[in-house]
Image (cartoon, rainbow, N blue to C red; front, top):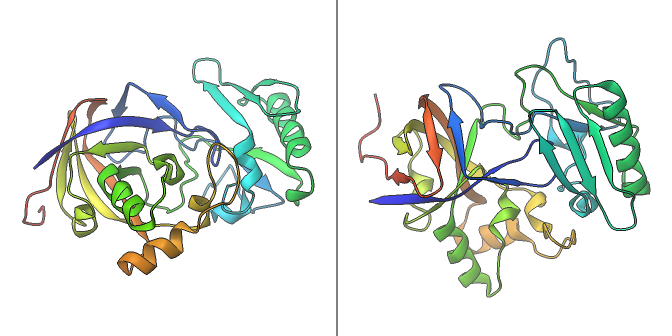
Length: 258
């Protein structure tokens, strides 16, 4: 069975606004391009740019801990490394995140927006080649829109797919089929990938990405209705290639990939 790519998203700053793309170039063993390159520490996290390693998302300004993060609307220009941000009641922000003055200015802007919700001090962090993923091996994430719609039907209310902050949104796969695909391969546009594991969801999905309100217990809804807390899958890119909206995403074969 074949699905197709309905949408592509990157999240340049962990926890902040998804940015919609028309295409992306995937590379073997690499993360989704320009995804989660920066994070904002909410107090010292122990992250060392000289020896970057996995750090729990709870150390950063993320929706799971601070729903008000969704009040910020951010956009990142990759060519200039410039981040722009807007929020109700705040002056517009623009700064270069590759330079300390821009990082410090964004941290100050965000501290004003979050107020007492952030324990702070806030600090923008990054390291060459490092990505601030929720799982240390969560290279690229895929959300099956049929699974989201099935959850909607079970709970009787709309569920915005952007709650799940996936890189690739797919139409045409059977609902929940992806939960059984660990270790199998699929074609993703002109790239090839191996399914790593289902994505276990957390309280970040409880936050409406538009209103910044914690208004739905998605984790409980998943467990109550399905006996698991999964929605989406992580994949690892095994053959480089471009993927674009409308490209095919073929269901894995029934046998594990060698």
